[in-house]
Length: 195
Image (cartoon, rainbow, N blue to C red; front, side, top):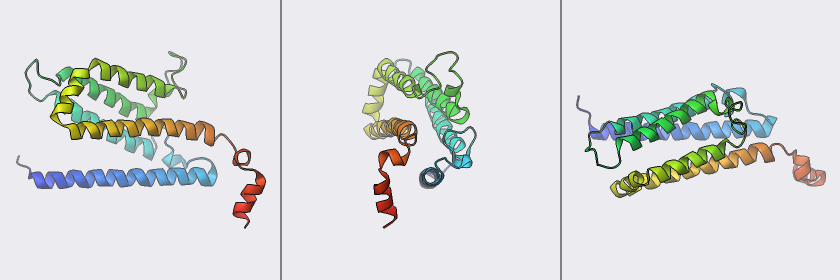
């Protein structure tokens, strides 16, 4: 089967553009519903199980894991880096992240590890990312030398995801938990909305 590279690149660009537009739409609907009703619409609840938001996120994450599983099977010499073990480890972690997004697995492990299932899951996942970075330092270094642009995009995506997760936890547990009256005195609220 011969595929025209220009058509394939165009299809990938359209798919990525569509996914980004959907993500932005989901965020606007989600935040808008919270601002209007102080709770998200159930169909777009990012903390819910099997909602549109979580299924869409999971599909994106699982698709990325398939790419890494595919990279693991590219022929290479035994000593060549990045190793197959590196690609399989990254693919398995991303696959788990997709399943966790879909089924909220981290919320069900609270009986095994007391802090799992609470807001501290970010620390656990961040620690795992750091351990993989240290354990596969040579493999990451070889990817860096192979394609710095891809590595920078990956690092930027990871940083955005981690920053977004931390910001979301702060937003959810601190800002949403505090009634606006405690943040803004009644006179300021009335002054802004009453003229």
